[in-house]
Length: 79
Image 1 (cartoon, rainbow, N blue to C red):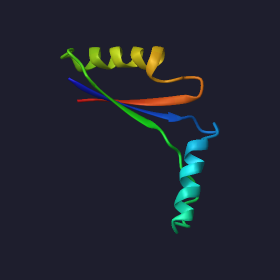
Image 2: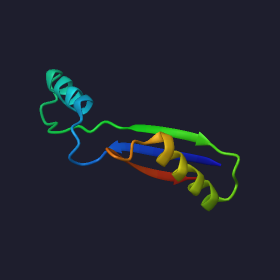
Image 3: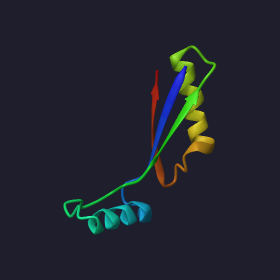
Image 4: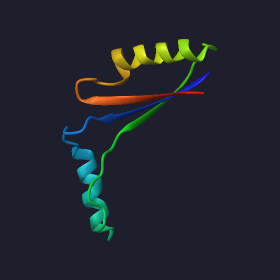
């Protein structure tokens, strides 16, 4: 079973990488970009065949390692 985790900084947390991308886009002539938030996507191949059990495992992975839950939020897609 495949799982995809999208990790993003929570609202209100400064995103210096996103700001650097926004600035670079402006330098390239893309002046209409008012904000950029940068995150990460993690794709997992799981042996688990039950979607609910897989979601539980991936949630535990996120809470323990994949996301810093103090400053990041995450979304899980199972499929």
